[in-house]
Length: 184
Figure 1 (tube, one colour):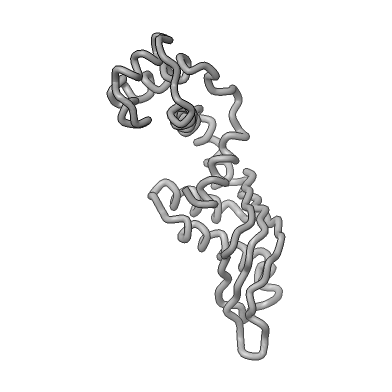
Figure 2 (cartoon, rainbow, N blue to C red; figure 1 turned 90 degrees about the vertical axis):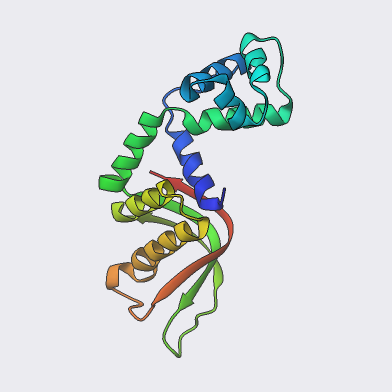
């Protein structure tokens, strides 16, 4: 996963209304219910179907690396309805707030500085950008493609202030991300 995908996943987790199962048995039970069989869970987490059944019965504990994969698989599927509602609200009315510290580069007219520099920005992007970001994620877009959507939003909202300034700015790029957080 890239930085943008991780930020979306963290923002999704902040919206959970209930915590996912905490025990290994509970997590495995949830995954079996979601995926349909122990064999499907085994493929997902990289163990045998027998191991999955042993985890489900409580006859075996998972190694730390397997336990981490189980937790990630559960969290990725937890409360899909809550995720969908939050994404829909952000994409139709709420928009998305992005806080980041990264290097921003520019393509600007001759005579202006286009040297990239680190900035710490918190910018609220309109719903159009949230919709594009979630659609791109749903279609399996790369981290760079999602960064480009964010950079385009920053260009319009922050750097050009909706057309009030920096009208000659043609492109903004984001690189060297220290951190990136989303809220919607």
